[in-house]
Length: 242
Image (cartoon, rainbow, N blue to C red; front, top):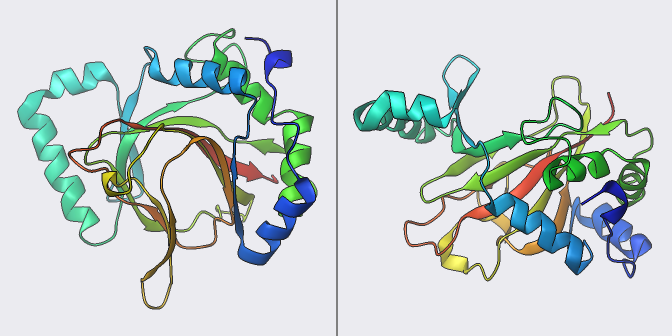
């Protein structure tokens, strides 16, 4: 796949999507990519990737464990790590899931010609930044972060906001690639009332779906159920103005 092969749905009503975002602070766009493009991305996400297990450690430290790190820790070492992660989560601190940073150039962990590298290039193209700018009504977008994300059983993200240290994150996005997801499999993107902590709305993972939302809204990803029939695959990041 080359950059020119990345095609989006030509029937998107940008003005309507912008109205929805303006009214709610979020919008979900199903069928975002043309089918062939979506299939190529889906295949790449489910292929062999150098996933890292990421979690938050008290003291503002993000830990990223390679597969070699996990093997070195062994079952006992990982169980100890998980106990700490879950104890923090009881206090609404932290997350754990599998991630892979997507670069646009020669430093890409999967190679310059990999479909996920091409996707990262598209997400940083004038075409996508212009589209995002039109929908969220934010001029001056400079770039897009991108990371492949996989939530397996028990993975989660506690409630938080995503404004960034300098308010440079103008909107968060999730490109979902989960087929036939069931509501009780968990993994829902939840929006939370800051005062009551009630869930005001939630989206189940979907396939070939772009979700854009104001990261200053409190949000979370509910734990993926032990009986979920698939992993929660996505590409996520922020539309930025640096």
